[in-house]
Amino acid sequence: REARLPTNKHIPALHYFLSFLALKLLGTERYSHVGDHAFDAGIGLFAGLNALPKCTALSTYSYSLDNAQIFRLQETFIAKVKRLSLYDGTTANLDFHTAPHYGDESVLQEHWAGARGRRMKGAITLLAQDAQSKLLLYSAADIQRSEADDQVLEFLDFWQRIFKGVSSTFIFDSKYTSYENLAVLNSRSIKFITLRRRGHKLVKEVERLKP
Image 1 (cartoon, rainbow, N blue to C red):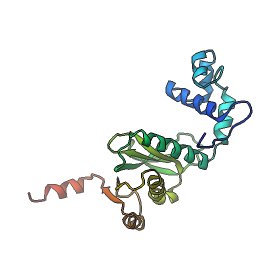
Image 2: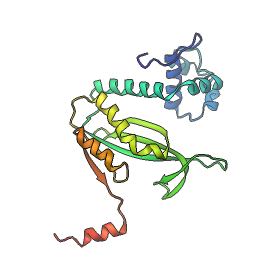
Image 3: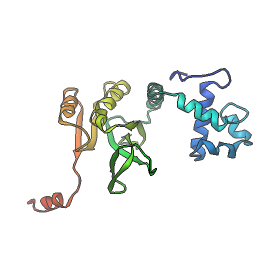
């Protein structure tokens, strides 16, 4: 309710949210598989309904949400989790992940997919993790390459709204953002640690260091 998600006269926003949550908890990845649970009264009860909405209703509602609504929901949820003291909040791990797309007609940009060791078409997603608890505390999807450098500042604004007055440290890859944005972090009293890729040259340089 605090996130002010859109609602309609047939199914309120809270019941849609609980329906999506039920499918996620059950490991149902596609809305088209919601019919597998059509006769499960317990799942309907969890969502506050007689039964879960059908595939078309779930898809239509999902596509009706814009970025502002999604981020508002995320911020409201994280703020409530913080009140439960589940986040340490002093250190955050930031990383980009590429969700690959294998379609022949894909119009998505190519990005580095670290898990596969090569560039491939896909969507960039930013994930931020609380270093102490290992819980996720932020995500941003469908990031364009031209937007990637500034994502650290988007996250910083989010972080400081949630963790007010907390002395924070961000940990991320050395190519994660630009030097200009690192200067912004400095000016806003954010400590950070950058990580270099462990290549053969770097390992040899370390081995040559004297004790």
